[in-house]
Image (cartoon, rainbow, N blue to C red; front, side):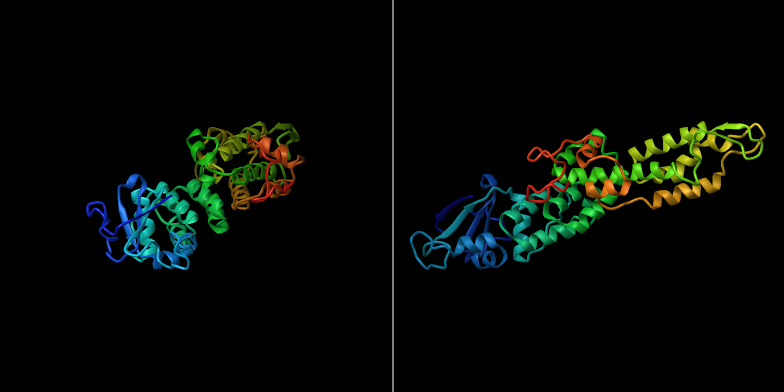
Amino acid sequence: MVVQYEPPSDPSKLVHPLFNSPDADVVFASKNGTKLFRVHSWTLRTTSGFFREMLSLPQQGQAGSSSPGPRGETMQLYLDEDEKTLDALLRMVCGLPLLPIDTHDLADGLLYAAEKYDMPGPLSIVRLVLQTAPLAMDPLRLYAAACRFGWESEAKTASTQTLTYNLHDPIHRPALQRLSTTAVLDLFALHRARREGLRKRMNEPPFVHGGVSPCVSCQRPIDYHTWRELKYKIIIEMDVRPLGDTIINEGLQDWPEATACWQAKCVCDRFLYDKVETLRVIKDCIEGLPNLLLHVVDALLLLDLNCTALEFCYMLNTIPCIRCTVPMCRKNTLEPIA
């Protein structure tokens, strides 16, 4: 940001029509000087911690002066924000009609500017807008913003919405690169916990173990290979779409592995599996899986995995923190979680 003092006469073609008050004593110039915004210093003092401190300093040797610049002149500030971002930001602090925030790029620009200039008002407005369409339709971008600014509720909501995503798909790589190491690990932990939780549950009663066992009717040995193949298909689908809805709504009805399972019989003509009961139990298992943000250690405890948090990170195909070599650090500290 560059500060200059100039006479209060701006080229009319550059001044924004909503910010052209002749008695405004501060002029903002957007990036590359494409647009000028005249704003009253009193508004800036009451809405921005940054400008409150800046404007309270004596200007050009006038100790104790409360005006932005020398008598008869305005303070002109050249900011880093582009015209659209600065327009939307100043509308918020000046109580003017808001511009539609319909892209995450604009929302991110506003968040960074509001954080830079210590403007809690615009920050809270953008926080609310991010939870509405169309911005809410991109949960990874919402999750990134929520993690950056410590919005726990929004982070949990967004993490649940990402359960329809395959995080290993290259299309999501740019969004994941915006996240901190901790945020990425927490998100992968949630997805991993759902997959491993369902795998663990399907290896327990009332499900068959999948090995060879005698038929309850004729005592002939039965190889439950059709169930093993269906379980494998279910786990693969949970990796692609951890929400599990495609398993219940389509997979267990239409998959070739499912059809083979429901048609499997013993040589004594007894069906090996109760389709209705199996569908009900699998549905209950999926509905009982965690659907909110998990920390790495929480996932380890939930799954009862016999590994360290560092080993768990490698299981997620992630890289430990380069600063302290452990998988997760507490925010703004080097204190390891595990």
